[in-house]
Image 1 (cartoon, rainbow, N blue to C red):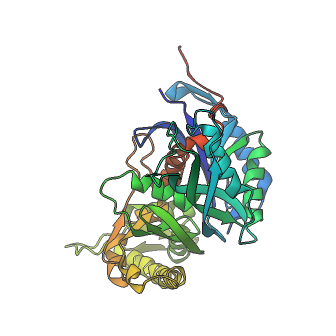
Image 2 (image 1 turned 180 degrees about the horizontal axis):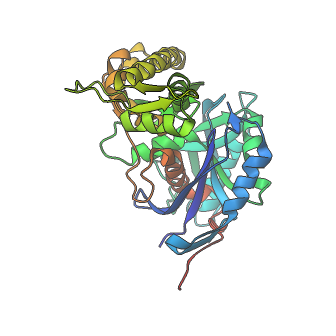
Image 3 (image 1 turned 45 degrees about the horizontal axis):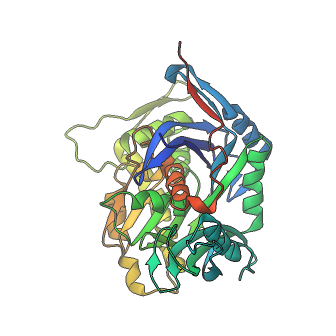
Length: 399
């Protein structure tokens, strides 16, 4: 079995962890979990980093008796939100150092180091280098590192992901405070497009919309590569909070109504209430599906307005025809029943599809980015030190 890796993402309200490994371009999941910590992250800024760190400590040495599983995590792949993301292209060339003239891992590391140590065109901090091609001195190009190939030089063309320094610092600090090292940091939408790229029915070019609890990110993907991302403050919680307000119910019930019914426009022969609420004086109020539909439509109208404005911003320097690119919805908020049909006529995309993970053991939409982290890391393993442990220890009880 391949060595397992731990992939972690900090959401606005909960932490998500997937432990698994890549084999033949697919992720095989050994374990997945979420841990809520309340609304602790807002727009990439931690409200109380100590509470998030405490949540991380709880899973550092974790036991699940039901799965007969014990795990000790010393290092993780970390997803970073694309807040302030800037991407640029770079090409660098290095001389092959081996006496036999064959390209080795050290040559790949050297050519990547030229990019990593170079001056950035932005004030951001370098987060990740995504190779597009490797070229030998005779002009032959490879997608993967051309290890063992004869050449006097090797050139790399890459897309470089950068983020504001405070994003990287805060997210890493939440882990380091719990005694867990960061193996590699990867921008979340790039991880998502890596996962989607492993599914044969997903096109190479599309608009990626990741709807979280409180934030939505909109990204441009071309030839399975991330070209840019923007974001706006709207998520599935906006609908939940509105249901709480109008129906006068708690968050658990509001979330249940949203998930159970969604945006249901079916015509029924009878009209049954979806909930009954009794006030302090004992008066009962009934609420029906058409009321819920109205609440959801009002919130989605805000979402559509912000989404189209974000698309204008994202695509302002590209061919206007890209607005017709297929739109793929991911993330927990994308699972709202009826969202596809509502959204399709309100955006310029020719097609709108919701796609959830298909990986056994982590099919919940909330794990999209974590699964993608494992694939993204596996796509270029020679740049990083493969001798470091991915998961310190992973065992099953023998009782």
